[in-house]
Image (spheres, protein in one colour):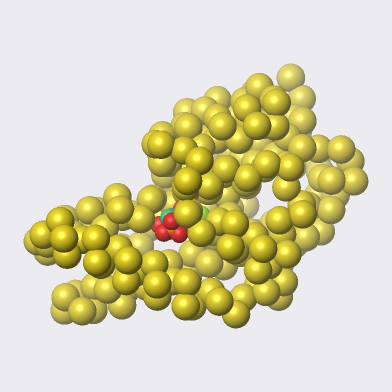
Length: 213
Ligand code: G6P
Ligand code: MG
């Protein structure tokens, strides 16, 4: 069956906001006297906010009361929002707009599948919202990546079977989510994600021949 719809993760695939999530967590961990490297960050890429905190507490051997967790999660999000408040069209990653234009002018359906509660904010600030028929964000799903729900809901909202959809993802959790949903997945990452069907480092220069993988 041919591809009729394309589903994109947002942070790290279309916009470089993955960097701001990383920096906000780094600042949180610094308050506890802990380092946080880009390699550490790979373990929480694409993972929901509260689950990310649990992973970090275990990774860095920090104990925290439930009350403190709530305030830390709030602080992390406030710092993240502060750092993205001035982003605009210029922050869309190279090749993204060109690829989206190709998809839209050739009649493909498009959706966002993000675990972030801030997805709409980023889509509006960058002017990307108009390119997507459907947006699935952290508020819309119960089970975050690597659970397949976010990609399955994306396919359902586009009124397509998962086998008719192709996903673009930068995180291991996200690649697993899309694969479990029954889709072909292209990893967009500096490092290979073995579970993906294909690996590219950027959307720059991409054309529709990628849909035939
Ligand atoms: C995306 C990002 C993650 C982030 C998650 C939740 O998947 O890749 O780094 O933790 O969304 O985002 P939020 O904006 O709700 O904290
Ligand atoms: Mg991502």
